[in-house]
Length: 261
Image 1 (tube, helix red, strand yellow):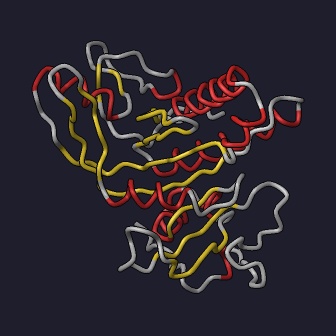
Image 2 (cartoon, rainbow, N blue to C red; image 1 turned 180 degrees about the horizontal axis):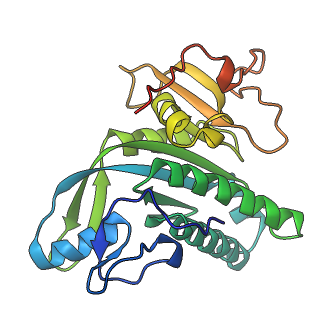
């Protein structure tokens, strides 16, 4: 789990407690740094500043084959598995300067101000669950999707019940791609991996082609090319077409390198 200070996170502020690894050293009297959404929600309640838009990185994570979990075990056992999964996901998101937007049954939607931190969190979640299995813990495989883009943040509900929501094509594409990847894998659209080549090259080189010009529901008019980090022990062949090789990122001509800033 990452314990380094989050140098990359923007100076979004709130007056809530922050995870130690996400705190900047600030002068006395200055607000602490935290991820965006909690501060924005508090700011809305006081100043009514929503809706607004912001570039965020979204990470969807869910338990693969959760239906079998429910049918093969007691509800109490299934709940214990989901509780442990949710706690682990939450702790890792916070340690990487992210936060949880929603818990959605057997999954969660996380958000981050930094793409690099989000990618590190995605890998940390997968590796932490694998480590639990190797030490005799519960066997849980997850799917993870990653996307970055402009998101509209606003409040929905009524005066009696309100919630902050994140809306935008990047959110919906991440949700759709989650269902495409194999259990234990991490998937992202091409533009995410292009940025990671610049912002976190040590992670970008793990990605392999998953599908070129995929037809994704809701994005039928777009040509969606996706990359994935295969599950541990996977040779790297795409589950979309096992007869075609899945080249490494370094061999793909369609992945341009970003210019030096």
